[in-house]
Image (tube, rainbow, N blue to C red; front, side):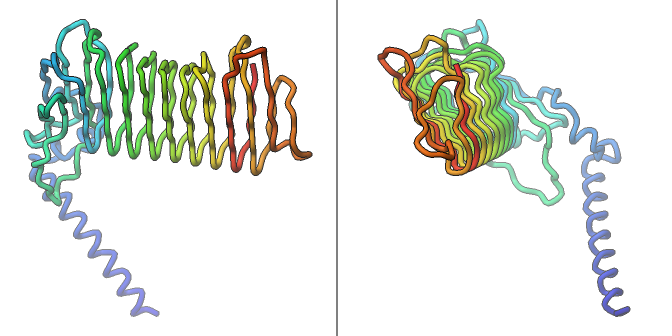
Length: 308
């Protein structure tokens, strides 16, 4: 028993020694304790690393692709796209963004030539600020592996596509587009206002809360609650949640057909429903005088509530 305990202690001390050595080399590399400060590495991303004004006339697509950065989108009265990169510590040139022009697309991305270093623990707080001209009405595509995406201005474009593996999605004002596609694997989706002809919104693990939405489309969550407030429906709206509640609010004067189905849960409304079983897990309704918009809601494990 003592021998086994001794071996365990030796392994623990070896791990501690290796870790301490790594931190020591890292501190020397970044010029002493100040360069090694956790405050520098985790502080607010307010040090401008690079900014560039990009002419986008004649380009139909703005593509943003970063492995690990928070993205902030605003509009500008200027004619060009402005990109500002900020971090909590100074970046190497290889870590700064580059601009590619591919056919009719402007691509803003992290320099792919960065060399991995075992003593580089990364820049844990980095953000990209995009300032899109108000007169630009083409397409915007944002992809982030790890980081938040935030829209801080009213913006009107053609197609808008945003996807992220880990991070929250926020719309603090309004987004207007012909097609809106939002996907988050791990993170919440919140929006003040979405206006579109068609939308597809997917959250694998996270809640979804939209204060105002219009158009036709699909909303799906695997693990998380859904709260939708409709300002209008063109033709249809499909809602589904594997694990989580669905809460829908429709305009008072809207005519619609509703169909709700819960595997484990109840369907409720503040207007009469036609229940198809005693458990009140399946229900339908026809409200108004037509033409009718179609609302379908399905929850595997969770309740469905719809109200006017």
